[in-house]
Image 1: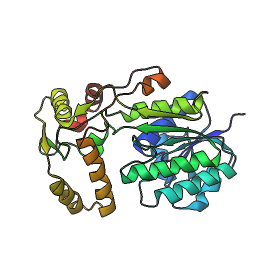
Image 2: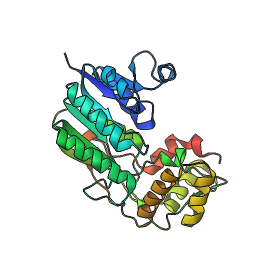
Image 3: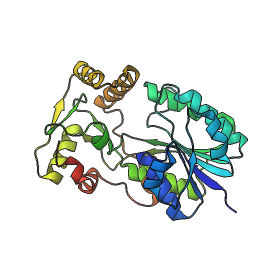
Length: 287
């Protein structure tokens, strides 16, 4: 009998979609969650839920029992490398065969940004563990315009200048992950996941305005103002520093390249931003 697939970060945007898509594809799926009561409302009765927390090493054993493959979505916390590497070690001891890690675009040998360094360190640890692996390196998510920098007072405020990025829909990231976890030929592969075209924030606001029928504009914010705004909103200093690193990279259009990896794995072209805007239009009708 095929072993179970464990999904970490299962209640997040990507992890939730991975869990649901895996369930439809047929393998036994186990979602690692902190709060099973809340998670049950999201997943219904079809998904096996198990207590799991990266900051509780004691939860690793039960979550990994009988697991053959893992979708590894690291936590965004300063101890990410230490905790994620400990989880990889536990996965190897438990007999896991294949880890599909959600990494980040630009997480190569010497990434110039903090989060990239964390992902690179964990990727290296996985390589050295001897486990089968696939690394998914997505670009910035389209859904970030819902969760992290949505329109406020009819504008999106970001310190991007005229920079562009090939934003990817999290649904495509989840589709790639689900296919990799349920088909052969992906071990040792690295997939850089992007949307079909590079866009600047002015392009994003134009598309959102067209979808909603309201005025939405782009305000290019000075970095100092962006920093002060995030700190005043209560975002921890380490996270503000990490976000500003990413913004600076995007301002230089470093991640504007488009790849074919989504279609290569799923057989379908990636979702474009106009489709994303139509699918989530209710999120942009106000604000």
